[in-house]
Image (tube, rainbow, N blue to C red; front, side):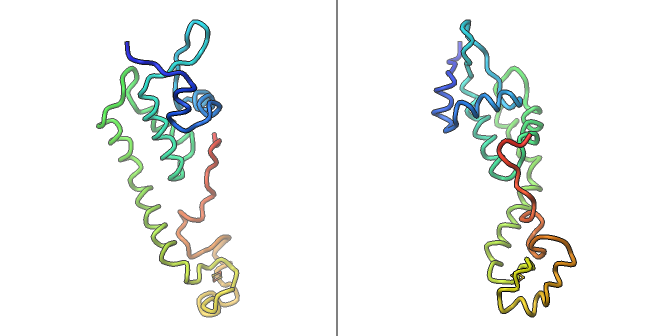
Length: 156
Ligand code: FES
């Protein structure tokens, strides 16, 4: 029988609090079996799922979005490299958008971003009297990907 890990072992290896593991189980991101005494036991493959959850959160996905993706993985067997590839392919467009947005942020912070501050000498030319405000709230000339409200780690 394959080695099973306790919640403490998984928490230590994954760098997560046990409470986070219990929350992830409650929202369906991971599952655990129980010993006769009720203690959680996890297959080693849960570590890859948890790494995937952490990475996905870091690129802005909500827990429900991550769960929907994980729900497409096969039941009853450890996901293969092909399974993971299919899953990440579904996020390619979103990741491409974020990469482009971050490049814009890296290269464009010296320019006026249409935020309404009017604090750079260029703002008087680029955004006279905060004309950008007519387009809506936020820094109007930053990519929409950078103006989204970030999900919280407990979203869902
Ligand atoms: S940088 Fe804020 S309005 Fe120009």
